[in-house]
Length: 114
Length: 373
Image (tube, rainbow over all chains, first blue to last red):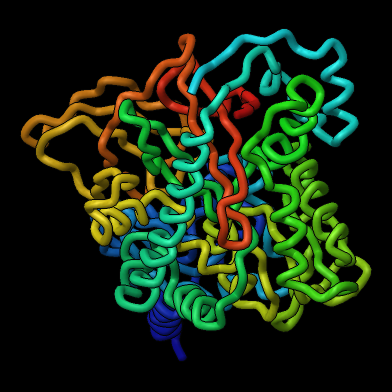
């Protein structure tokens, strides 16, 4: 393999790897924490609402911000409607915690009083 | 109904704290009380009974006939909706709930909302105002069988020596006080209880365990279903019997008020309520999920254009949408606006607690005022 062939192969492999790699969001994000995944998507965490905002971009094909809820693994659009995951975004699974302490985080920032 | 000023008992702080009410601050002052007539109490009892029957029918209608409504309006994930259906079909029992009524000028109680999942102001409605009555007006009565109803409900749900865990967010002294009170009513019914923070529940292979390693099979939670669903769908599907049951997630939001109106438009207790903005009228605009009166406003609508009459209260709710409920001007009593919290325990009316505000929207600055009749 000459250098040119190697470089083409390497670029192809990197591009392919970028296509198949899945996003793994940070496990214990802080409020307003920003994260850029390997697919080039920009994410911003809202601790109060416990969700990641996915910024629209040409890469992910979105025209409005979408929201990902890691607790339930669900997506909502800007109007709050439940939607499928954007086609340009591949999340790693499992996305939800299945062991240990799973409840109690909202109660630290909000009151139950009705 | 009249509001009457009264001199507080000289040592009332000490007295109520002895009963575990150590989170009273400016919320309990006993500087006034409400005097009701017997026929007003009967009217409230009848309204509460009918309101609960209608609310159960509204929940049945959603769960059995329009399950997609849970996903579309309440944003509940499909797996959790199936768990709700299962819990409803299994008739998983409910301990309690509290209607908030506003008394219309003609004396009819109007349903403002149903606090079906984590109703609070329980200890003060139950023991504290009763103690106050016994000290000052022992010759009068109070519409308050809350404590006895709680004990009886536990007995109806569990055999003696059964074990129930009580969980909540124990960083909050009010939650802790309410949990301890509820645990004491269960103990009075012969049940073995443990009170712990909800964050200390350990999920393992679909089952919950407490920090000592004991399996949690039955759990009273003072923690809203919408938070639990948001925090862990897997946790909501675990093998455990919750009190309140998960079908209360369908009742414990403002959107069900629109179904209630759809099913019972002629009920004297039901106010017109809509999920989308009506064309004309004055409405109370409330988020589907909201607590402590947050993000509530009064709006005047002309040709679908909204004009604010009372500005939206602070808060960060409203993301899931709003409900427009027909506005009724509340009656002022000595410059205060009372809301009647009417308790349903074991499916039956059990008593009331009255909170009042100086503004028309009841928020976390309201005061609890005892009553007699």
